[in-house]
Length: 112
Image (cartoon, rainbow, N blue to C red):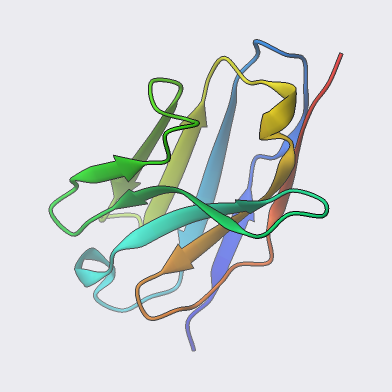
């Protein structure tokens, strides 16, 4: 059974940084496209960043230049480095894979 476990969320001031991690219990992890989504209160879940099997990446316009997605296939890990955080980045962040498995989410709050 696939399990995705996120960690690294928390409270940070505007302009600060956080690094989210997702541990994936997936066989043949390197064959999966991995994503980070987020859902803010009262809003729909949105795609933040994706990383393909060849490590090519895509980002939502709202996070381009500030967030970086990466993967470590040897450790079955996906990361989201978030810099220059803004209050509008406040949301629950979810790890997701290309077979539509979801993690439980980790809360990110950007506030002074």
